[in-house]
Amino acid sequence: MTGDQDRGGGQAGARVKDSRQDRLKLALRENLKRRKSQARGREDVASDAADAPLDDGGGNEPGR
Image 1 (cartoon, rainbow, N blue to C red):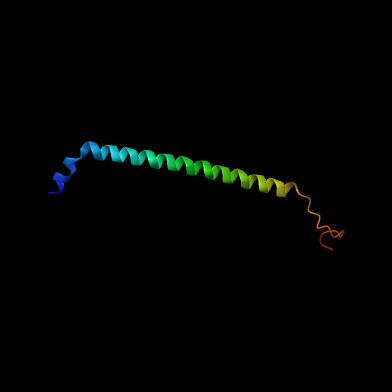
Image 2: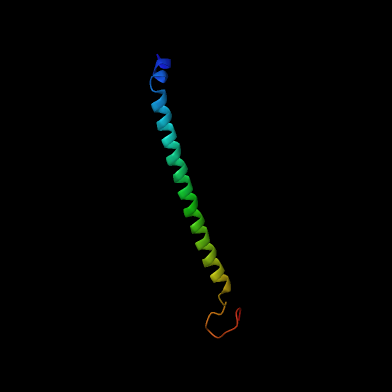
């Protein structure tokens, strides 16, 4: 029966579930670190672009 299958490996099933949760927790933490690092990199590029002069190098005033 279906109820008999759940009784057999209670301890082993719990250990497998715990190790799976530990792996998922670690993967989520690493993913968060990677995403934060990427966001910091994008902020650096955006701030560099914001600090750059808008001169096109042609010697003409913009819009003329």
